[in-house]
Length: 288
Image (tube, rainbow, N blue to C red; front, side, top):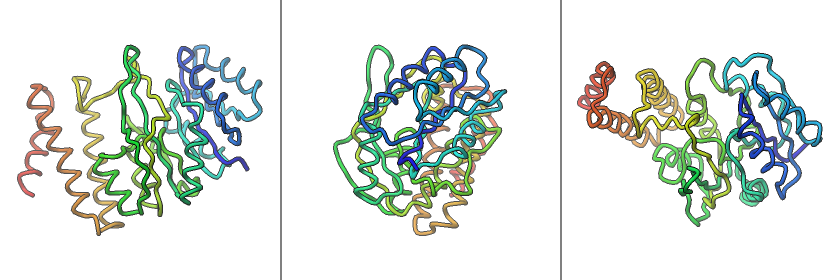
């Protein structure tokens, strides 16, 4: 059994995929398997995947004939994983050469169910720190959930997090959603007894026109995406309040902070088409 199963789902990314694959092949830590899921690509991605799988015995190629969503691809990768830990990476990003070693050493030294690192956002002409601090700390289940809700030290993005694979038993990424990870990561955190965080940058998110949703910050927000986030925040609040009532105040504060930021964003940018969402959020904030 390998120490780590790296799960990489790709779809029509022949332009970006080699950078991620090379960054994994050049890792200083070698005891891993790469679950490479070709999610129905129709460009040259399938040929790239086949070539890397043929060249490296650690690559397990999973081919999905037709793209039916990233969630199906990630769930297929999870089903094929055999490692003690799992790591999800994106096909247009890259890992620093010592990332796997860094995370697995952190997890084992602290007997952590989740180990985390920091990252950079690469905009092509500049690099911006993203959840970086030279501080090493370990938190328990409740404090780990608080930090996930508050988003001061880390967020829900999977690529900077090494998970003990057993945390995922019975869990999966949901189908028919626009952003799949936000619906499941909090459930994984709720199961984690110890979480180790050392926010040294080991992962690079490559930002380009085809991957930046950034809906909170700019005019790419859509009513459908806002509806999904609102539903997730409310479902998460109910789920965590039942299982972690000790942090009910943090849960409610996170929901209210999101609604307030969305109201401010809609009003300040004079977005149209959000009247229903704006009215519902303002009524909720006024009633509490």
